Image 1 (tube, rainbow over the protein chains, first blue to last red):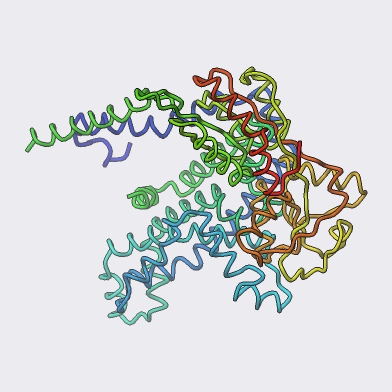
Image 2 (cartoon, rainbow over the protein chains, first blue to last red; image 1 turned 120 degrees about the vertical axis):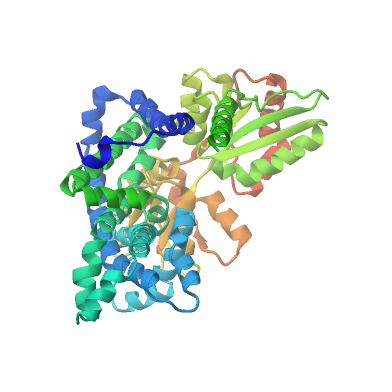
Length: 275
Length: 264
């Protein structure tokens, strides 16, 4: 037991009542789906070639895109949180756009930009690099839709913290680079972990943008959600089994990350990411 | 203050319960209104969107006081909805296996009637970058061909043509929906795609420069038949049969064949 949990303030009864309804609302459909599954054949359904290919591809692309999100997202979050320039709020709104755009629209935007006839895709094509219908296209789709989750989480944490420690470090002679690596980044590490987990989760479930931009081919672009969508056409039982597999993978990842980074500050980071 | 928050909380709780209550009110879509007005609910395959909209307009014009509500989606989605008790009066499928799912489930009133056929065609971007002229060209290496997955009717038809001709296509992608194949061809991502004649015609009707359609004789190896049937338990059984008759009748057939469908 941690000291800050032993003395919990009493909550109003209605808050708890609505919370119970809210939790049941999220959990009940998944539980009902589980009861509809063909559990006798679960193992053979999820260990088929196509299912394993889809699972491998999903894990691979989600891990890679999360890494890209961290590398790109941290600078974006820091710039948004720590700089002042005209049009900042507009830039922030634009960066967060994939959060509100329907995934299919994200896919269309990527198609027009990075597709063979798009401005960037055309240049790459001339250089002999083709993105369409490759695993790279899947990763691009994932990064596009997941990045805002990481940026939003990290930017929030940076703003809450304020700039006191950084100013102190600077006054003691630390340069901007040293201050960033030794002061800013360690302080927001929990939020970074939480944001990365959200980005990973969003990648794992990504469907619309991938389908529109990358296509669907076993082992190359057909991730688990796309495989579920396809299986539903002929074999709803297999689709439910694969859905449960996705649920299990998601729960495992959250549990794993939670226990690996199981410090209190990391949990606080996760909580911050949800708030 | 405490009182106020308690009252607000109670209000929120009532709101939640009221929301939950909504679900029990599954007002039948095919209900009859007081004024003798009837609503016929028709579930039809997505590829029938344009034609069935026209046929429904004709049907409404011929039957005073009748409104036709159309719901378009993939045939397998529609069957799944019907099996879960969705209130529809008529079901038109894009293929026979999905119709069989409905009849096997005992949800069809009478035997399904075939009302149209559809065959595959090759579509390419308007400038045909890979120089496709025949079905054999799709098997060439380096040609980016997009097809439907074998699990869906258009992909199954593509597989049948491949087997009949001995041509092996190595697709860059296998889509779940024929519209995704069309989109990847019109955007120039893929060099060629296999879609139904009606899909190509529909796209060309909207934009004559959207793509190039290349018909091929081997398409006759895989003819897709569309069946229609009245759904069991319909509150408008007679009207549903009349709608089926309108689809299979002369006027309905003209609409379908103008869109590129073959006669059953």
